[in-house]
Image 1 (cartoon, helix red, strand yellow):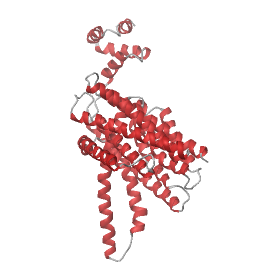
Image 2 (cartoon, rainbow, N blue to C red):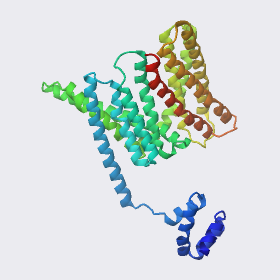
Image 3 (cartoon, rainbow, N blue to C red):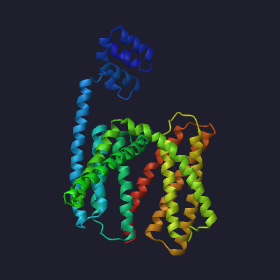
Image 4 (cartoon, rainbow, N blue to C red):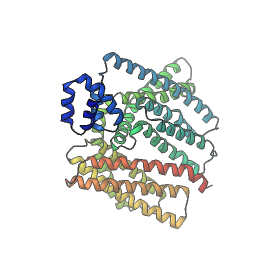
Length: 415
């Protein structure tokens, strides 16, 4: 009991705790557990607990864990392929909308993240509820070409992407560093999946060509059963490989970000000069306004990926000035687009498409402003680059909220 009291009294005194431990390590370890149970929130005792009970993972254990992860991934990949094929059957019968194919892939990637992260039950229940509610709701909507329904189809992937982010971040969904890791995961995932998909397409073309030599046309069967199954299963495999810290994707993404930023900047400047020279008017030309918004979205994506691929403790360089100019140009484009949308709303009336585009443009404008001010402080040596990355990650849930708003209200507002 006396040793317990000594440990409790010196929680804030690391030097004294070390002295007590060295006097009798075994007695200290026995007494420590009781003190730890009484003070579970103490960070100092938390460090001591790990020190006293830490067990190095053996090579055998590591190999066993890798094998378990691989088997679990394989089961999920097969299930994703089968479910996607079943969903595609109903899509062909025009019973459900094609966007349902996303539910044959994304929930299984989320399941793998949950398996790896083991979040608390409230997070798991939230994930299950969000997938179920969105899936059931989607299939209660009428199958038609109304603008409000099409907008639901367009926003469902954004909503599911945010839900997948919750599965990836787990218990640390509120931490900027974990959200940043999710953005990096997406870029690495896209590169890896695209690389494997190209190989798959080459194999598919070769297979169909070989069968054509013997007079068999297997194109429809091969696409419906092999390509579709493989594409969905490959999505799970790619998530597994990225989570295994595959060096190919991790090494190439920073260079892609550095290469594309200046290329996008030059292209954008030339395009804007050409627009002014020709005299295009986004206020009256609907297609041009759509193109304007496409450019804006592309610039935002390139800028975000460039920022997230930077080291949090790096010093400013030419890439940062390029990114900052991109942000300013994107703000100019967005301001023009916003003005054009408001003009069209006031003169041509409110429609689901115009309201949705207005909402997205407001969000992007706010996001760019949110990023620009920390960037200005960074370039003026008033803050570190980590504040820029924080400004990127903190805004992500807002897109999910907007997508949810469009999905669950527009079909009723514009019925």
